[in-house]
Length: 277
Image 1 (cartoon, rainbow, N blue to C red):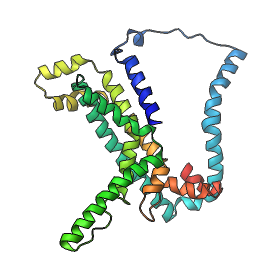
Image 2 (image 1 turned 135 degrees about the vertical axis):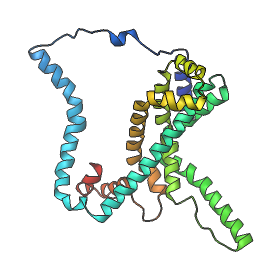
Image 3 (image 1 turned 90 degrees about the horizontal axis):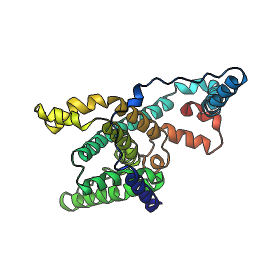
């Protein structure tokens, strides 16, 4: 699977590596719409409404109907704890992934001639192609080896047991989230940066700004919309990530995703309607 994904990414990059567009004159042109009337207008409206109706309105209505029977669950201590865990983990992973994505995308923009850097940026996007369970094992094995090594060293020299420092903690979950969804944030940031013309960089550098100054004073204000969108997408993906969370979570540490899984696996869909909402 990973080899197949690498081949696809390489072909996609090769297909558009020479295609760059910063401004389009068509963006400001006025398009005259073709107005439909009568049955054609009704048919077009119904056709456009079907994906929204079947994919969002109907499922949301069913969930709201189920949730109405469990209003007391919304303010329970356990539910609020699960929601807090999910929010904290997802927000932390989203912020970290955006920071790393900005660093990778900007380094790629500054040093576009370095093939090793280009390869590293592309390699960082492979985590999105891995199943969550496989990624969780790839995270927990080196973290467990590190914890065991530190514990053995402390026992040997200081007769102190350090226990689990990284594995079995929220650090492992956040790390898995970042690796899993870094491709989403990197793609969004890279796409936003590609719309900033190189002349903006040249003008900033000619006015005495350093590379970091150009990033904070020019690029980040221009692409803040793309950054917020990427952070929102990563946040939502982290909120519903299940396999990695099940494997890496600490003991007695549940999230909304694991809460839904416990009831859904027992076919008690009504009980988990609030977390799904």
